Image (spheres, rainbow, N blue to C red):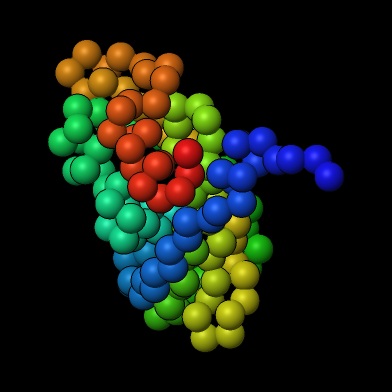
Length: 151
């Protein structure tokens, strides 16, 4: 039997958070359908919920001396959301050895549990004062990964 690498073992553990968001009036077009750009904001709501639950929020990162801008975003639309719907945002952290944060998302309509969108984002670490791209994981992030069994 072949043994698994450290990377394969770390990728087995998944950190995921679900949060519910009520679709607001200003997020819908005149037909009552949610404008496509708001789905990206729902992704951000998922990341914020994830950060709150797992101690990796934007201010946690910032207080460690870093910022994490989005460098890639992808969204596949499956079904429309409408004003008054509640969307369940499932944000899952994808472990990587690279100095980045990758999340995948699944959005569901809460009333019927229908999948309405899927997507992903990638963020990189920049040192906050000079905006220097970090090519290796910052020490606080390595510690966070270890605490969450992702090392």
